[in-house]
Length: 88
Image (cartoon, rainbow, N blue to C red):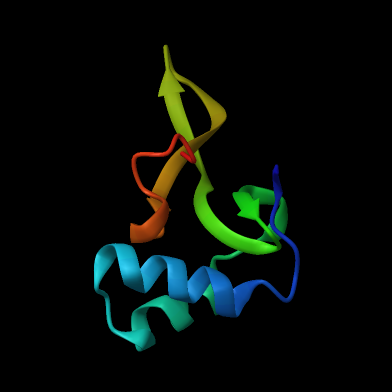
């Protein structure tokens, strides 16, 4: 099932991130504490487990002198055991 992340998924999101990018725990904990917002994180769950996810970080882009709000995809990842199965 694809949907927005929920508060309380931080432990699963931390596991997903570290298994994909090999970042130290302090990096993922910092991101999840200061940048994570459930409404900007899409997850794919299988049997209640987050197996794939991505973050939509807010930014602004300037076009012809005007600023527009945008989101960009960040840290798109899938647990190793679920790769190549269409989860992302």
